[in-house]
Length: 89
Image (cartoon, rainbow, N blue to C red; front, side):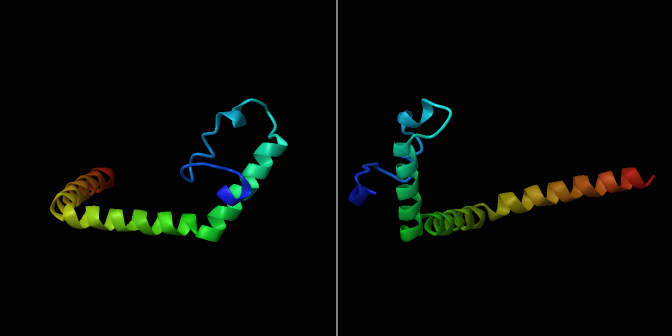
């Protein structure tokens, strides 16, 4: 966004700009900033990159905690089975 005169240190900083909380309707400056922000996000594929990185973190977490997750699943499965049996009576 720098090339359009908007200096924010990261993609979420524009959302936190305190100037945008003053009125019920967006100002012209806010609208121009929002358009520039969205165009930049699209150009740089911010959402796609965030999604990919987040997915990788999740996959690592699952791999690193496979035993704990398997135990949790087993516990949940036992509880679901017990609930089904109780409801079937």
